[in-house]
Image (tube, rainbow, N blue to C red):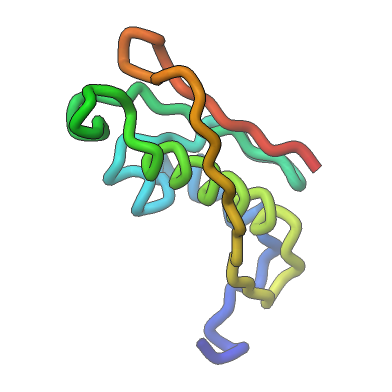
Length: 114
């Protein structure tokens, strides 16, 4: 992407404009993961997983949870961008087994705070 094609407002204003327009990051919208709050270096995503996000054992797939974390990392970084800047997230995620997560547990949430 050329420097001329990059938005000339800062990242926080870009995210705020997206939310004000009722839009979501495209991948998270497709998966039913919603950005509900964003500020400088901070964001909150929520999701209520359904059967489409389950693994064969009937619990939430680890990739779904990892996608929430990756999205939160990306948006938190995005809110700190100066005008005309871009980024690529390179997240190293370690997966640890924990108690199963299913829809009966209610909404899942992930928040990153600077």
